[in-house]
Image 1 (tube, rainbow, N blue to C red):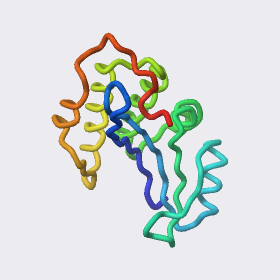
Image 2 (cartoon, one colour):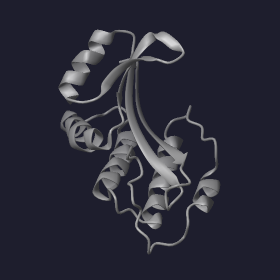
Image 3 (cartoon, rainbow, N blue to C red):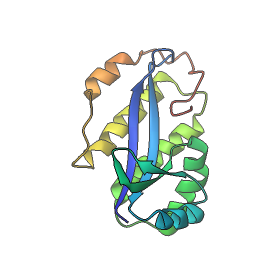
Length: 155
């Protein structure tokens, strides 16, 4: 495996009540497309595409919340990952919370997910965030009496 990544982006989305979307993505980067096809068959999910800016590399990407929660997480749980275990555990918790709260996450829950995403970023030395945690948290309303109409991470 060339590179395996558990990432959670925080996207500003003013039309959502909580103003941000938590967007988890699992990816594997590899020179050999056939290796990714085998991994895709084992996982039962994802799509394979060329890596932007590095056309000699291929990526297996899983970013659909249902695929992440119902296929990827159970498959990786079964494999009992050793490498990147802390990152996987954090990513797993974020994905499962998103899946459980689909269509009914409160702003308080979104804030918790944002904090977890920033914690995940700190586990990767190369990871950088465009905005500080405080800046993102300040954008999210404090009101918890309104339920979000669309789950963060839902496309």
